[in-house]
Image 1 (cartoon, rainbow, N blue to C red):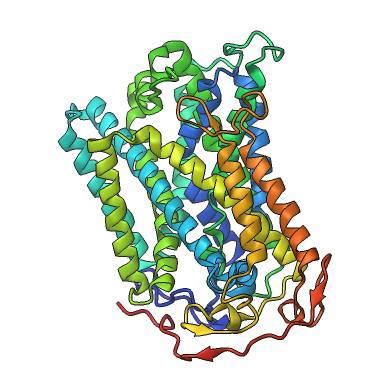
Image 2: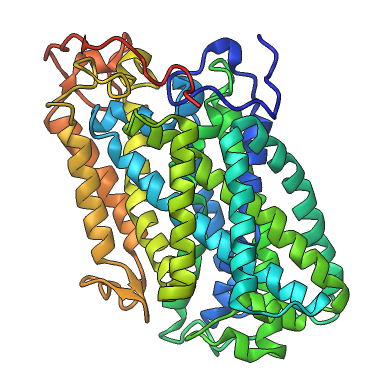
Length: 511
């Protein structure tokens, strides 16, 4: 095994298969990246939503645990594609959506990255300026916010350009530092925290209780789901021989560990709802402002550090994978150039949304809709892995990247209509069923009496329809490898030979 490159060496690989000799990462590294990317201020904001929905502290904690465990279970299997195929999850999806159908994963990744990068910069920048205002009297002006956003986004972009090793170093520091600062918060708020905070519901028999409870659980669940398109970006450096249970365990435990920022957000939100109720107005919630309002003076600096460290983790983990994958969809861009382009566009979106269009609330809706579309894609990937017995053809997965034709995953002109149909039907139905009061309510949003069932409905439709299509319209036997299919049948259709250019334009970084 070769020595790992220096963290200051710009990463050379795009989405081509990582050579075995260069796979020096461990499941612990995957844990650090996944946990570091979620152990942030943005997760604290999500943790406050149960209180904003009117739940008591204990009801909110129950909803948080439910969403976190279910979301972690759904996410964990997506970690195995990286070690198996040595590439990211969008490329691996070629096996189930077709050589061209893999662009679905690429653009889901792109939209998710822009949304969560924006949320990260906004929340962290607001906390930095607010903390600096309380500590040093920095004016809370448009110029202050603009400089904070620009500085923060620029730092994230630099880390992403250097690549995987630098990002791993940042997250090694962030996991420990942010965790210590969150624990320090227990001392800062110990005197004000009251676990008996009652919420607004007299009992669970209140007709509005269950929509609020399920809605809060789904918001928490959406946090692990948002990592589905990115896990392969980080796990592709793990050796293929690593036991699958260890890889999935690392992804699962990383999300469970985010109970720390979720609990911090939930507990501090209950304090804000008691001492500074104006900041938890559902029509215009301001968790960051409320946190600073109830924090003791000595905790302002830790709040700023949480915002800086945690935001760096979220920003880098979101932006890195998108630059990586964008370079494969548009081969004229190297990973570095693609990362720079996506980063600049994202920064422009951040300033436009914050100062021109006031899209802060709309971006949360945008993120919810993206996740609603991503979850069915994840189900198809998982069921595809099971039916294929975890067997894939690495060369056939790279056909799109090399601008070739044919191979095991060519299907119908590069599209596997079985997977595409299941994904589109599930995603469209789920979007139509979204129920976010005051923001977006789909035509089918009242199917369950006001309870948002879009995510579970999308998951169920994707699973049932995909397996039904695989059974009714079998895929060629050649896509299943020597052991044959599991649970479904196979056809005797021939596999077209791979033709076209044999050059691999992504095999080396073009800085």
